Length: 260
Ligand SMILES: NC(=O)c1ccc[n+]([C@@H]2O[C@H](COP(=O)([O-])OP(=O)(O)OC[C@H]3O[C@@H](n4cnc5c(N)ncnc54)[C@H](O)[C@@H]3O)[C@@H](O)[C@H]2O)c1
Image (cartoon, rainbow, N blue to C red; front, side):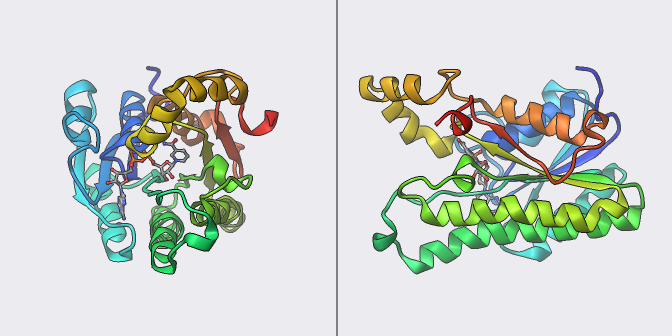
């Protein structure tokens, strides 16, 4: 703990579970209050709700706001909730889903549209609404969008997810171009396989004997990432340490993508 985000406020979508929960804990450990914006209060795997965990385990405050990122009014309410802590300095557009793996020929257009609505439109709306508020406040800010290695190279059976995450990548760069003049930095994080509810089945496969061999061959660091790894990266990107970093996407993937 070094108070890299002292007296700031972070609004984090999808923060009830997984990466969002890890991000909430890390930014609070570094001095930020947190608005947990999610469709559900309970974490998908286990434990107390994130806002309670932040309050119990750090010296910062947190509150839960019910928010479905497909509804811009609910995102606006989550941004407004930061006023209780003095305004928003950090927005993390993290909420996302995956579909069951399927070849493109077997996908359903309704499922595709739902995924795009959450994983891409939700990031667009979250960036826009947070940026509008940051511009009103007049003191810059940091926006971090969750992309994926699946948004960088083509992987089998996840075409909808790749379409959304590829969109998040370049959208992040374009938004950074629009917002730089206001001192608002916009960056992305592209995780590999992180230990969350989203990857439970994948990891169980990879935990099998065949999967273990694949893990050793594919992941140079030979381990999965944790939500804390993602939280650490948000802390860096949102702190003064990254004061000249914008329109960047950081791989947090144990080395998979650049060594294939
Ligand atoms: N886990 C990984 O390996 C991995 C890899 C690459 C990218 N990511 C990205 O990280 C982000 C978080 O994923 P995770 O692994 O923590 O998943 P998760 O399923 O553990 O958590 C996702 C959270 O998002 C919430 N959520 C779902 N739909 C929502 C909606 N419409 N509005 C608001 N909240 C909603 C869920 O309730 C849940 O709390 C996602 O954008 C995901 O694509 C994850």
